[in-house]
Image (cartoon, rainbow, N blue to C red; front, side):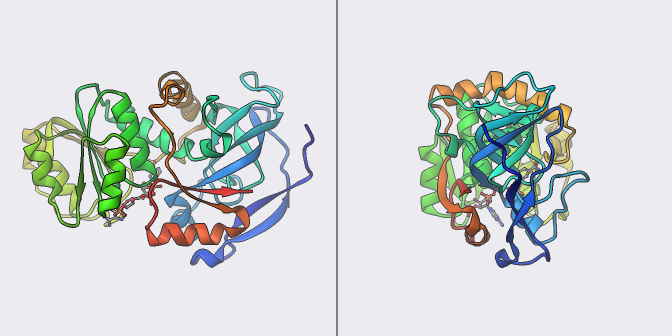
Length: 328
Ligand SMILES: NC(=O)c1ccc[n+]([C@@H]2O[C@H](COP(=O)([O-])OP(=O)(O)OC[C@H]3O[C@@H](n4cnc5c(N)ncnc54)[C@H](OP(=O)(O)O)[C@@H]3O)[C@@H](O)[C@H]2O)c1
């Protein structure tokens, strides 16, 4: 397959609103020995991209230039040490930058084959959420069949994936969301009980339902205390963001008495070898859930790559459910 001399990427010369994004043409960097070049069918938009655009989330050192943490498409070239993929393979991949592009360079270890029953385009909505949920709910949270997961932001990109993966694992799932429609989506995706946090108190509802063994939280703020209060004995609470703020005065007595673990993590800056280890586990444990129809990316909207600003505007306004994609 032919490899072009240039590719399009999305850059942000000055941090700001959605209109700060520029699509530019750049020489295609040379492939490292452990990388693959993907002709992208689609690229996923994630909330962290909007924080990066605003200047609040700088890329880790050495990250490829440009916005974007995931893409899917067809491999058109491989580095000389890549043995697990061939030219022509359909893959989706996690990248540390440069994901909004027509030709995306990814570490082979951070790429996953796309099951036949999933369109390559839709697969672009998988890597960031699947790796994040795997790392936090399954590894740090060690969610087991029969346990209860409480996921906040249940109708978002991470939330819609967490609900489906936890159900596939055999867990009971409770989810919070901010509208009736978003709650309905959470239940359609498998949540046993969706809680509209605008007019219901999730803390008392979850406590009445026996407590949550694992809580995936991106809200923080006042939720930190409420999560501790409604966690079950031995509960694991994992912070992946702080949309309501990372400062809060909390009363820790219940944390001690219920032997709760409160932790958190980020994905983007992890070493390539760790992402490759996670990719192996995801290939074994999660891809079969896609192949048998238990897990699908929930796609809310698609935009042309050139309209990345409109995609960010939609994400900033928060009216979306599930994933937003860009088509290069
Ligand atoms: N640590 C990591 O490794 C990692 C990796 C990926 C993403 N993240 C973070 O995870 C978060 C979710 O990412 P995403 O791509 O799923 O974003 P998303 O699709 O925009 O979903 C975020 C959800 O959070 C809810 N929400 C927003 N503000 C809220 C508030 N103040 N109170 C309660 N709920 C609120 C929204 O639901 P409602 O409209 O229902 O309120 C929305 O559906 C982001 O903050 C992102 O930065 C972290």
